[in-house]
Length: 303
Image 1 (cartoon, rainbow, N blue to C red):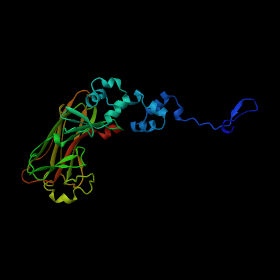
Image 2: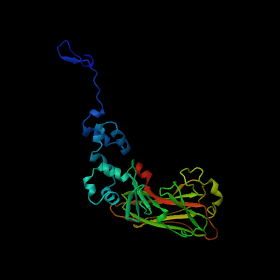
Image 3: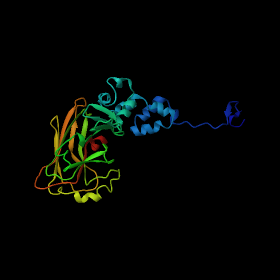
Image 4: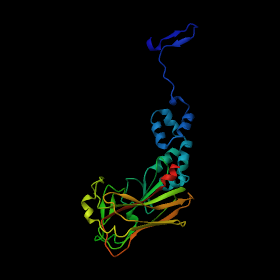
């Protein structure tokens, strides 16, 4: 009796007095739900997949994730995460999740997931942005050629949580500043921006950036006399140069060098870059060097 009690209408047809659950999106066929999810951004898809089993099952459809992956996703997955041929048996959702995790490697030989160093000097880190699907790369100062880096009169190495690589190179003083590096990678087609990540002032060892350089600002000198020259060149002939005075102290800044375009997703490109201030008429010091960053151009991805 009660909620399960049935009666008859005047025409003799049965009627149920129990309350029925209203139909919702979770009652739609799985293929219909998948078509709805395909129109959303990856973070929104993942949030809906947590609501019920129907959305969770629908969110695994390959046609949802393949358009959100880079054109050369199989090459990237096999070089960075999986062994050769393994990506053929994996779902596109698993490949997407794997590429979104930061992947570290040293000199192009040892691959490892973020947070697992294994005693090797990690020099580069690659990951895919979750919302826009663009590939980003960070190259540590440890893989760069830096004039005087092994002479403690000029440079010191400071452990800090303000760096993805947990250590930065700090310039105490020098006459001739010259930093050079190169990297090679199969970037997916698109427009990319190149940055140097620097800070004027000695950073602290913790994550707090606001008070990191206030006590060491008196050691910052020589950067307002002549600008620092940043440049890079791509193996296909593209290049960019910019000059900047370094005058903002106490926080990490990304100094934009320029942009370059990748047209062939399956052709590795080599990028050479440098940062110089070689005017020997004055000393300069108090500069923290962390890394260079390459990421998809934000204006292009919005379009």
